[in-house]
Length: 428
Image (cartoon, rainbow, N blue to C red; front, side):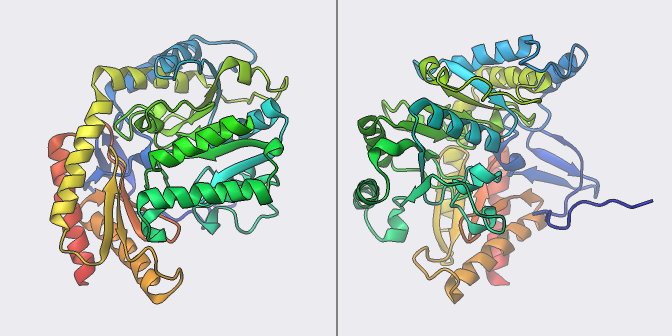
């Protein structure tokens, strides 16, 4: 008899084996209690095992677990659609459900191509959109997501991100540069008549926790409207209150995309994702092009209804804003004298601490040291009973993603633990 084991490629960021978890805390089988500032990569928005979400899932399991929604419809999916609709921009009134962020991204790409009859999808450098073949073809947050199984999907082009620090420009000049490069691409690489959509995260996730400058998003919106293309916003990580607004793009006044992609925090850990668009656009998808065995699962949908209820009743979007400001201020004040840190940034409860000079040569000694230091800090956090993750194209950024339910005391505790971890790593 063969003894099975997990793939050796699956490397844990921490050695923790979970016994149980509640709120912002994970209890390991080692008897230790860890303050979780990873939230399953931004998924457990209402904290671990919120009683309302647990009760909703338990009750639904006793009614029906799998009601395949193109065979029979179930009430939780109808209820979730109604609740989600309360948060969607005016005019975005049609929703399709899937399981994961990657699947939702692929559904959005398929819809964009079918709705416009065009082929090209333009993505923005440093964006992360998933690991499946089409989603990985759209991802430029690091080569590890797309290397080794090419060729990738055709009909994709990438345009520069206006990273003012890396470009050594003011934000306004960086935006001007990036929009001019987009225009140049449209003159030399892609015919406007073949542009189906521009796909972008309003706040970069794996690419480094960078908020996209509002003027850049507005500029891209102007161009998609000019060319008759769609603007697709990947809100998988930034949505559902993570940035202190329900959607990350709501930090740009008046911006309404054509398609919104959501997942992660929408169901507190149960696998469900969705794309939302105006019905007139959604109706242009070809018959049979939307579906899937598990998409819109009844238990996941019930958890989603409960999650959105908790977000509303407990004021979690506003809590994200307030607690995020507290954390950002505490980190900046406590780490102001650490020269190895080049930036501490964040919006809502989506924060990052970057090590090293972003203008340094990738792969050079300075960049390698920044990567080593970020990894050392993330590991030192474990010794402080604090869980964090790294991100960024090189891995030189530590990201901090507390639950939206995090308290003032928990933020204060996490801040002090992180500061101690940084000092330990820097001094070692």
